[in-house]
Length: 482
Ligand SMILES: [Zn+2]
Figure 1 (cartoon, rainbow, N blue to C red):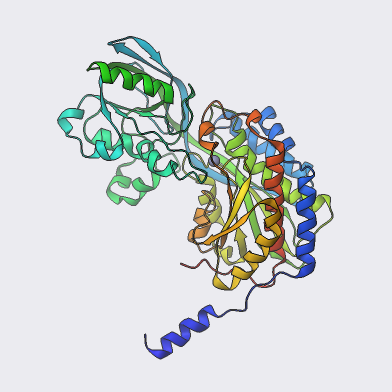
Figure 2 (cartoon, rainbow, N blue to C red):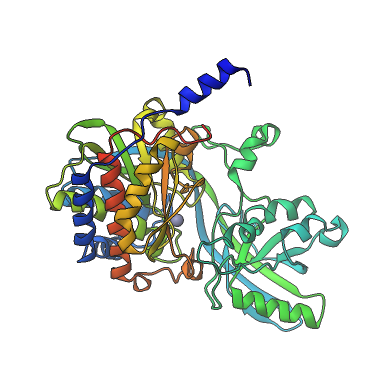
């Protein structure tokens, strides 16, 4: 490049390195050790799962969860507690069942995918057309699919970092759209989960952003009364538990056709306005600069949402509460957000980013806990080059928790993704996800799966991260690709 541009590029990146002072590092180490002796986190998630329980967005329990969160922030003596509205189309689940009619009649354990349309008030019957994964379905011939119930059988692979999820869940998010284009009458998938039991895994059955990126499709979508596009599946879509998927496959190996009956009573019903619930510890020196941590308040309806994401909400609340309990006031404001409706399209995170776009540069750092309740093993970041030394300083305080330094590339969580797209720097405290997808989006996501000690390790890591970000001299810069 011409020399003058090279000089400009250099000067743009040559900011003063961000540093954290020794007193703040020592205070963070003390807070870390206090968290390990027992935090509020387990009591918080016990309270949420007992007093509210399942809290699917738009359900009557959505409002009870918002009230619970406001009360909890106040009970824990946050300096400021408030809500911000989040509106979305309301999806409801009423009834779901499936059975094999021939060759060997048996009932199947099934659950509708989120955003699925129903079967029209009566059961639907059809022969099964089996595909090993979404790619195989994409290359199927319409004549083999037309009028059939498409079944996609891919099984999610177990991994500590959850890397098996994304390739497997393509069948859930895109399967109905692809099957409908080929003329199928319904979609069934093997649950996107790593367990072998009879709990089906629900989850969103559409990709709302794909629909919104296609202007022709977007123009055709029905809308709620305030004009929000409704993205429903094109055909009824449901997931079989992993063992019911095994059963179906054993029949398909023996004889074809296998004929199924599917009955789903679910669908969109008007619009709902929930809320992001926000609690703050006010900063002493720079109150208008904020460090954001949080998790999502909503859950699916099948379990009590202990692991997804009661744990994340509890970890963030308990970490901030530790500062209050110990009379530690951070220099910058610590903002804890319990996001609305993450599960059905990241509505809370998007609403927050839209509402705060004008003050986005005052967001110093954002992190989110939404990967269960097991221990954290790594810190990843997505920050400017001048802040890498400060992240290393944080990691040194995190090291006794068994947390290693990761890379500076991807550090998103679902609800902070929209903030990240506006350039807010991010840190991810990576949790062990080996067992997370045994429970994810099932009736088996309950409090007994959470170990209090593991939750305390998370709180210890979050209090170190949040406090040191609030104390840092210098900022974490715009994310590298913004
Ligand atoms: Zn979640």
